[in-house]
Length: 91
Picture (spheres, rainbow, N blue to C red):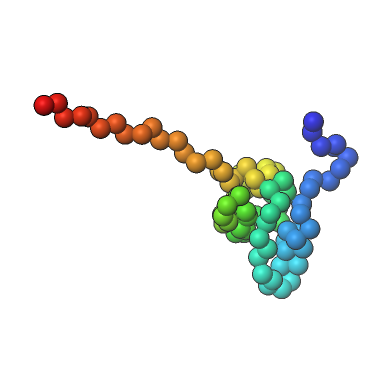
């Protein structure tokens, strides 16, 4: 079920503070654990590290990523490769 239209989009409080306060003074970039936060105009052309489950990923947000959730850009699945079969030597 979608979020109600009368509610404002969700941004984690640490990200919200970083986006607005960083215009006036440099503060340390927060590490994001909330993957459900929406990428807004505050984060345009900024690098923000977020936790993908076992490590941190740093992402530079572009104009094409605005409006999406942060968690959509961190792939958590390992790629699957078929095992290589070796031929047996016939004697």
